[in-house]
Image (cartoon, rainbow, N blue to C red; front, side, top):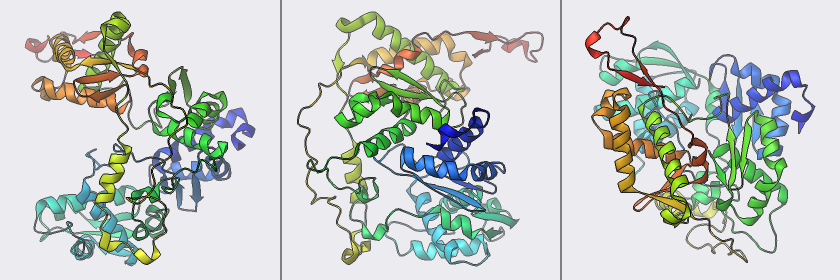
Length: 462
């Protein structure tokens, strides 16, 4: 690794560049900020070598863009992009985004919003289940969200007009955009031609080819797979890995290489490893965090930890993790692939899909780890107590919807791999124990500066 030869005084700058490109994958003159591209370009040689060695990622850097081509080992149901207001993209917005990119690739140096919409509408009419009707407000809003995503990343730049006015009334509103062809080209470059795939497995790292017991995967590739998982998952549990991956995770060097490259700190336990991002510049989900949902999630994590500690092995039912849903997710995605759009004559058979052989079973399975079950009844009761105690510190919308607040808090804990939902409750995962020492302080408003003395009982959770 070239990072080992970087002077200590400059290592922080290099690690910031690593975190930046791992977070955004695309860096342009304006995205995510004007200082980002110069930082990546400064360390381009070292980044290119180390990202390939450690993760198997390929980095391309030009004068105006830096594009990281990552490797995907598994489908992630929680992955995806969002609007400028942090609403996750739906299928319609993804379709408009892909069609807009295609249209921009064939356009000149400038394009108006209405013209781009016409191109997208024409292409959408040829795809079953996709339509862009300019007279429907919902379609216009979704289309403008896709355009805003492209604008944020510098693929297009607003030269005149207002997209919001067009979304409100396309008869009176208009916008004109300059097109950055280098960014458009860098944005969508799949590892394989999509029309040559019969299964989404073809986009995964192994191409969907079943493992061959006669030709074991090289240790270096297994190590890269584990390092990728370390930076992609909040917590990497050994029980979720196969034997070769679990062995690599147990080796100190595996996490040490990622620590050196990213500047993160590996928190190692017998059950697995979590990378702690004290900088807050790599994590897309900070915890503990601000806001009612994050506050209740932290309080609930502490209460669950205390119950697990107090009840021990005898007081709680223990269960293994539920079956991996990856295969079901692959099947769901494959079911949506339009068979008519696959160029059968050019398909590279990858052994995936309905006709593929099942992956070979390991010769000897490790005993499944058991996790304490926290019942729905106890969760509801505990959330009720927490809302009664600290509810006045929560946002008004959540004070009126404690059940929704509880569901959102559990969603957050599940995203962080601290719990996992099962029928009847949640399983408490090992990393949850790091929050068992949660302490709560309620900061009362200062009555001397309170403009409304009658509301002085309002408090804030800190």
